[in-house]
Length: 294
Ligand SMILES: [Ca+2]
Image (tube, rainbow, N blue to C red; front, side, top):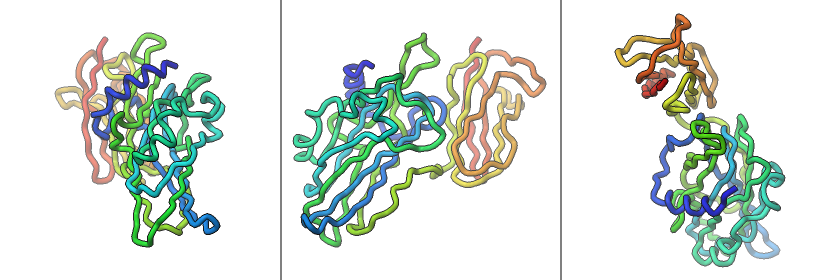
């Protein structure tokens, strides 16, 4: 794993907006934080536990992360990788401890240059999983305080991003992208201990860019449903003529991938060119383009 190159990429990605990254193959990889707080009366402080959940549908070969917080009394004490990732990361430690702990507490930020992923990366899964837990203490918290923990603006490096195998490149090729980050986390209630549940259901309808693109002969189209819906996913040629229907059924909320093998309803292999695919689900209608190149 070339972690030095991760660092170089990190600086390149600093200005990237936290929008959907079209380099993300398949379903949108998603990061979400959950937090729990608990009074520690013996020490006159609060313990704050932050959990990082990840949904990844590609093997993640490397990752970087960082976040900032707006309360100077919040102090990051330690971080621990989950059992899921422990066995795949170098000793369960962060690669660049100099970026961590004491030096970052003064700036109220935590940035690290990469999980040192070994054993071929973190395999994809069909649901979000816990990757890491961060342990903070809060020395003073009045009833009206809230704390914002935000990974979307992390100076000077940038967002968390993933490195995954690039299936459109020669063997060994890699690509990187910024996973969808679910925005800022606001910690408001100083005594509540909410359940730390991984996020499972998408917040909005979404139609992803097909992958790979351009493609030959087949490609995959991802989409997400926040609620159960009747779904149609239809492929048209550039003249607006229907080529094939990939999905036409009721589906429950969740993340999905449809395969298109490049054939029409009649079973014929279609020719090179631009094709459109249209998702209709509930009130949501979205059309995107894809390119078949032979
Ligand atoms: Ca993905």
